[in-house]
Amino acid sequence: MPPALVVPAYYPDIVEVIRSADWLVHNFGGKDVDIYNAAYYQYNLQVEGIKYQVIIDMNCLQYLINLVKRPNSTEFSRIASAYLTFFQIADIQLDPTCAIYEKINYSDDRADEAISNLEQFRGIDNHSLEEIAAYALGYEQQLHIKPIVSPDRDQLRNKLLQYRRLRDWDSLYLCILAITNIEIDSSVSQSKKVLKFINWCVSEFRFSLASLIFAAALFGRLPAKKMMKYKLGETRDKNIASLRNMTWDLYYVDWYMKSWIAKDVHTDNLILTADAGLKLIIDLAVACQLADGLGPLEPHLAHELKPIEEAYSNRHLAKRAYKSKKWGVEHRASLIKEYESRLLQTAI
Image 1 (cartoon, one colour):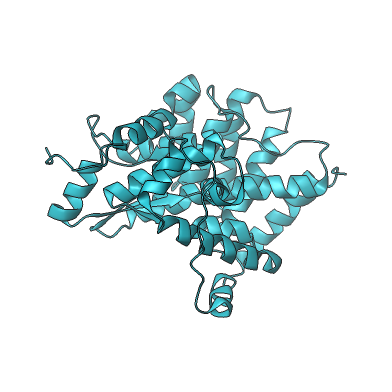
Image 2: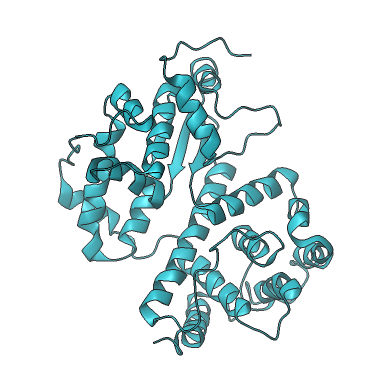
């Protein structure tokens, strides 16, 4: 049991806010872990030398920025600032890297706005703890915080635009295209859609735990609202944006899982999101990783789980496109082109 932590008088109120919101996802084993006890993080940092880092999604980044930009606070901005207060008390660092990449979204025109957001975030993250807490608890309506300006914006801009595609983004985008295509295919019953996707992974592409969990959450019995953002009959531009938005959701899951599996032994990562669909996917992915199997998907898939587990466990025995002669960047590009044509041809 870690020693008691000396905290500000408003600390219990801050914990009450964030505990009620429950935006934080972790991969700590054990049912008795209280992720909203700052003393645990402080103890592990000071005694065990373990640093904690929270990946924030773009929505959470925007909620924090809004506490400066908007004259009247919103509930989500207050919750985000309550989390920021808690993280500062617990000596937990925030990582907005993935959110900044999503903000840019491979558009040079958005790079300057993303850098401005990053500078504003740095100013907020380094602002007075008392003022951030006062905003979180409703005693302040808007804060005046100066951004911490980057010393060399051009160099930062070039660095952020260096990679035209982040590693694995195109592969995850293709998985989203395939899942969306199955979603609108009325010839496949809802109970068979996850298996359809897994068979597609075997025959056409490759497996991704993140995309498998996404499909299970979407097609299962307990989907979160608004997980499927693509809509038949919507404008082409909106559907392109929706497909990319879902890909970024998947990218956060993939980013987080890889950061966990290949982590530095002295760093533990968590993730903060108010998106119910994204949180569901990450929770399920973490549960499957801890269980070393797909058992945690049973409440979502029930009787469909057994054939899905069989297909997944036999994936190395089946004849697959992955690592065959046709496998490569060109194969992935051709599949992307095929599905984009199918999903966007009827758009306005």
